[in-house]
Image 1: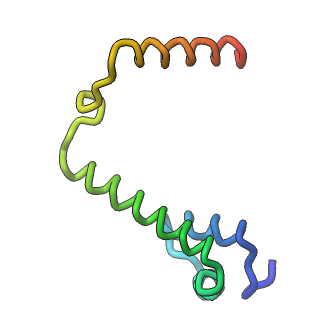
Image 2 (image 1 turned 120 degrees about the vertical axis):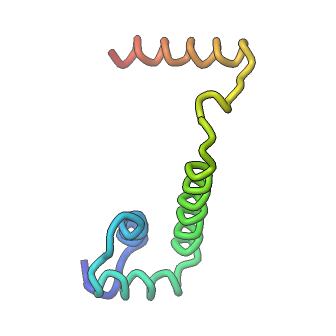
Length: 91
């Protein structure tokens, strides 16, 4: 991988990693240059940032995720059946 010319697959990985840790300078610069030229990777980065911010807002609200989700009985049964079928085929 050239230090300044990253492929989209490299940039998507680096964008994700950059949310968890500080990247080396050459990766940050190469990623920024790529993001200026590639609207798809720029959109991917924007979507990840929106997701991260949404999750942080939800966590800070103190709302209990499990108790806040209310699904109809029929939907819960369909999910259980699908999970059961999946575990039978993979196990």
